Image (cartoon, rainbow, N blue to C red):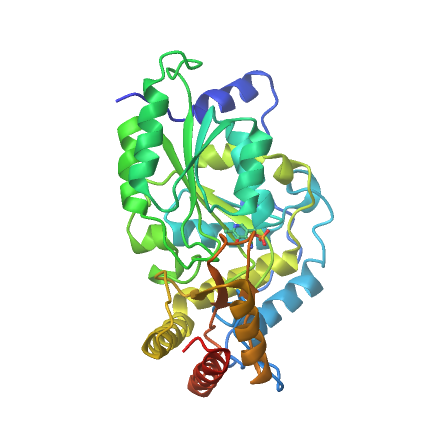
Length: 405
Ligand code: PMP
């Protein structure tokens, strides 16, 4: 098998040779600034305002309003500081960051993890730092992946959405091209979202790994909409047991983890490379300790509370309800796209549910392809059974009024 992977060790050795390599300090050498223990206790409050039920948030586990998460952020602000004050490589590193990274690595089953100031920065920073020759990218990947591909200057090949056969055909075509810049010695990167935020679809990750291994390429996944929601608080990689076959596990702290920021989890060499070469990491102020602490607490709760269970119960109840009304609900995740097709119908349905105090947005082109306008319904663990029933009733009444049912 051709090896089209990435020689990270070689690049790190070169940095050492030129006396350029930097490292984050080990935890016991990070300045002790009054680190705190995780608080516990407290109930999950309902998030919705009195006037309307919001079914449009990425706060999937309902943890942004959880007292334990709020207390963690508050305590970090009060004891470590409200801001990191500098890049992590200068003086911005704290035990709160390192604690978060340890918990992320443990959850993801990797050597290490690294926190970025956003998921956007994590995608752009990682793809550009890897310096791939060729990137194979799902046609519906998130804009931050698209921007990372553009900025990296790599040849980017777009394959059909969630289609491992299309990916394989593109890779075979690229491998066969005799007059290309020489596939030998190239590094190839496959990159895909795992859960797609507008479609609710889930990438066929095992088949993608099979194709990657056939061509010796690396696999990078963006678990922004999956992190915290699957097996033991992990994402699709954990749900499918693919930790050893996926090279880069990336995500955001801003959705189920109820905070702000991004992360990358992977091998020791990958994280060392990012510490040195991911420009949004090196040249940007470290994540605020408040965000890091909130994300740590939320990840702890994603793993050890019943929030995931409650979310998936709500998802199952809503999906059943929508389907028995006759709506088409594609995908297989917590995101429920109610596809109505026409732009006017989608806007009328959005207005109809809003009149009945349910908020969920109509998604139109260019975000989704023409003729597939939809209402994106995203329940959270903080919705109770009454909220779910009220949501379904609003859709039934509004759908009938608009003539869709
Ligand atoms: N990747 C995906 C798939 C996303 O949906 C988002 C945010 N919408 C991001 C990355 C960016 O994450 P952040 O908001 O933390 O910058």
